[in-house]
Amino acid sequence: METNKENMEQQIAPDEPLPDGAVIDAEEATIEVEANDQEGAADEGVETESEELTVASLQAELDAQRQKADEHLNHLQRLQAEFNNYRRRMAQEKLQAAGRGKEDILSSLLPVLNNLRLALQHADQNPETVRQGVQMIWQQCEDFLRAQGVEVIPTVGHPFDPMQHEALSVAPATDETPANTVVAEVSPGYRLNGQLLRAAQVVVAQAEEPEAAAETPSKASAAAEQSSS
Image (tube, rainbow, N blue to C red; front, side):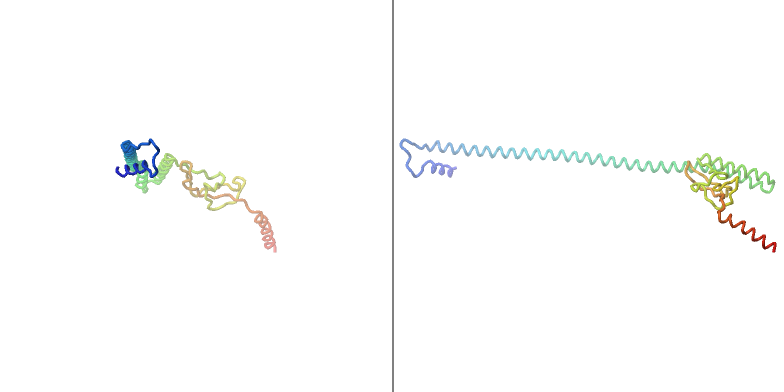
């Protein structure tokens, strides 16, 4: 403060003489310096207070954002736990459904097994009884497969289809069985719900090649010449 007063006095009292009638009031100059100092201190106080408000608002906003982040994390953890429980429940239900499916299949096969046992018990008594028992077992198997959505693939008399038939051998084509027609069935084929389960093994009619057909008369004539000689 004293330094300011001295500086003020130096500014007010220059080396050059003042004009006539000019008077320097030291008290007024001192009051003015003190007022300036008070204004500077007030400005510093306002700045400090504004800085404190800014820090407080930032801290409050940070706390709010941290709380939101904790809420989101808790929500995600709950969702993860619920998803894990759902996945375990679905896996358990799938196993239970598979088990029930096996039970149904085995229950349906038990009557077939009983008839087979009865047929074996009467094998030495009457061949006709055995035949009837085997016929009944075969019919039960067909009914069981049909109930499961299995259907037999048509073979004899139908055109050969490489997507459903497996040709084991060929036979000469005739007027009744043209080329590329199934003439015999070796093993039946099945479809499950429209999808191939097992291809049918068949014999397919095949037309003779022209060269082979042309060679046949020549061979016949050659054999006739040999026999005449």
